[in-house]
Length: 88
Image (cartoon, helix red, strand yellow):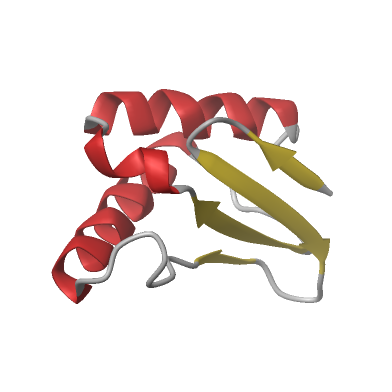
């Protein structure tokens, strides 16, 4: 299943072990520093939002270029909306 907002795309696959993958390509940001900052922000917000363990699902998160200038609170709201839509 694929869920999208203006800032992120979230893809869910059924797998044996639960995982969360964050994929930030060089198209989003050419510098590794900004890509890593974005990954850290996404990981932190996911950690705060997902309270119970995910069973048999792998979540892939693909940020879009518009996320670069957003605040942490905006990113967290967007991830929260995607997780609610995906029923996680």
